[in-house]
Amino acid sequence: MLPALCLFNMPAFAGPTLSGTLSGDNTVYVYLSTDDSQQGTLLASGDTWQTTTALSDEALTPGVVNYLHVEVVNRGSVYGLLGSFSLSGTGATFANGQTVLDTETSDWSGSYNSAGDPATAPPWVPTTTTVTNEGQNGAGAWGTAFSNIDPNADWIGVDGVPLNGLFTVDYSTAITVAAIPEPASLLLLGAGLAGIIAARNRSKAQHNPL
Image (cartoon, rainbow, N blue to C red):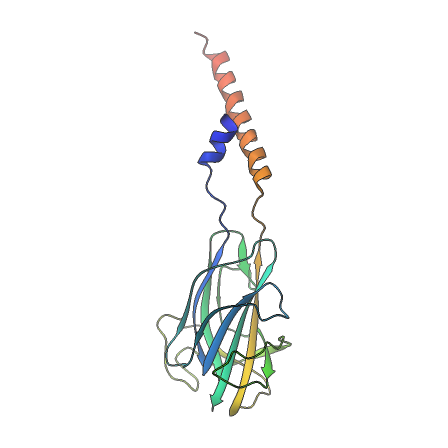
């Protein structure tokens, strides 16, 4: 019964989750995908940059690369994406190798998308180019600092995209997620721990005879 007892007392191997806060000028759609060429599952949306959109403990798919996809529909002058994201649990990292990631130019890619109906989620256009810095949180063309987004986060855009008009810009960043140990592996671990405990008890009995 020792292996079973060991397993019963082991912590649950729950998969890691994604949380975050973002703003998009103007309408934003947020997805999670396991294929960078596919839009993925819609997590959240917002229709104005003046308020933020939140993600909370979104489950990640273990054993594969997950992709955070964001579409920003511009319906006026300047456009951009601003956000801070974090991972909870174990076994997952962002493209920067950390469990926290802001919008910045190193770990995101983007693409121009001609679709521009803010009332309908646009089709996904795979990202192919690097992103550009449009100003820090609280600076740049927006001038509003969001307290629930890291002050070091940058508004990001895509080079060559016009500032005015009705169109969409797509953004992507990768999240590497480790596989969750299978039950058979946990059973072997429990059996190994039971063996160690039994050997230790035998040693104590030999050194402390009745």
